[in-house]
Length: 460
Image (cartoon, rainbow, N blue to C red; front, side, top):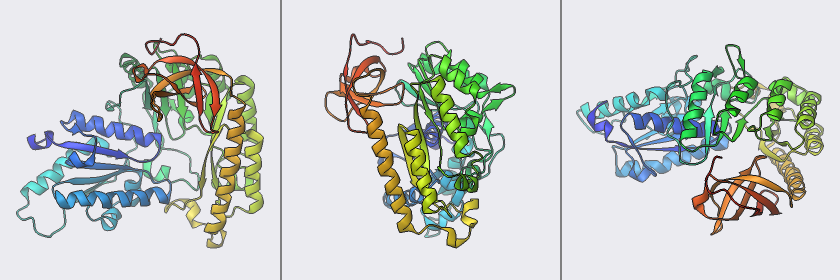
């Protein structure tokens, strides 16, 4: 890499899921190791990378608006490099240059290892260009999907704090008809467990006591003869790790073996995200989810029988093409039957390239009706969450202090069951564990009061 490139400053702005957050940290680590300085805002950067999500159209429109804003900086500083990375970049490819001609780099999720070289190539092109006329350029697209790229051997640039995301899997072998992920991240690729365990041990030396394992269908992880329950158990036994979480699992891989590890390993938290997507069997079949409502309910019963304190969350999509009002009512009934602690609710968003977009046009639910279904689902979900949380007022839980709360003089943390609690305290105690009585709830979060002698240091 050229000397001039080594002194450059980069800013990574991330949108989307936890995997995207982890990818943002990965890009920052790659850039840092190549001599870049990571800065806190685009105004101070020579390179701005917008790390994107492609799950819904709204997310992509938001990114297009954001890069248009960044073009204002580029007009002031023509040498500024604007890159769009991640799932949206992979999905749209070089058409992004047509939608946003001020973008210099388009890079999919399997291209990050080559990020410094790509930026150097752009720099050399500009340096060697004889004229800075009105000719547009240079522009570079890196969109190859690799069957073997799981970023083994590369280090993320992690933010300080007691928690960390650990990607153990990239891509997905499922072909849910609504989902773009397999087409923008490729097939499932699982990391070597020895590297994962070494990463966990290294994080412990940095003060991390809680890790969350990441994958598109994280519990389908296998490597040689090692299954996900085996890996989860080994990570839970790493000295210094006090909590282990994982997301996002697929219901089909919630097995008795996994539930046994969750029930018997003290470090594994009593929380399970179980994406149902729908409460109707015909819709689930057309989504290609490969389970029925009855099977899902059996999984819920199995988990609750072994872990009575388990908190369950879910994902739900309404207005999938062809969904009737009665089928939507089945989803509401599922919500009332399971009583999820939290639900992430979405209106179906057509993603070009996915099988669902090829369904007959007359099956697509009119936007107004789709929005009405979403609003009704949100109302039911929030009502259930409020009732569940109201029933927990008065209990005392262990809380890991994660950050400063919104109100002055308060700190915020999470219980093992993923409940968010704010209470009076000093920010110097971030990373500590303490016992907190849940005194009140807004329906979504809790206000609490510390009980007993608080820990003065995090971890043990």
